[in-house]
Length: 199
Image 1 (tube, rainbow, N blue to C red):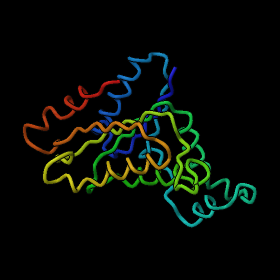
Image 2: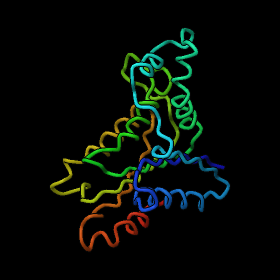
Image 3: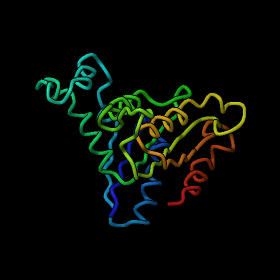
């Protein structure tokens, strides 16, 4: 049995290619492990709080000094962290927006990257505490950013990869449905991406 966490961050609903790609990856995982469970977290339908003064204070306050108000501000963050640790496989849907990730996904990141919880500071630097999990980044983009002249504009994959690495997630596979805004290429972009996935 395997636990799959599917993170959705697209605002494009059923037409979203990143959601379709993420669903296809989840489908392949279920076919390979039929007894798996899936938890889907849709950050558009149920946004996780962006950092503000109250949430920042709660995150930085030691456990034994947190007030009831602090704990209330941490409900969604704590839930996101529990989901992360409970998962064996994580599928993150990423619609490529303005060369990066959606703000809803950035908010999720800010809520799971927590000192003393998902990483710790050591004499040798940052030590990730979330280990032994596989991550699929299901990315959809209008242009081609995996290679060629626009590769330098991809601030989504390098950011997510380094961020996830910092909390201990090292086994990351990037699956790209790219060229969705380009004639001819767009017709087979999703199919090509799905066919590239091996679980």
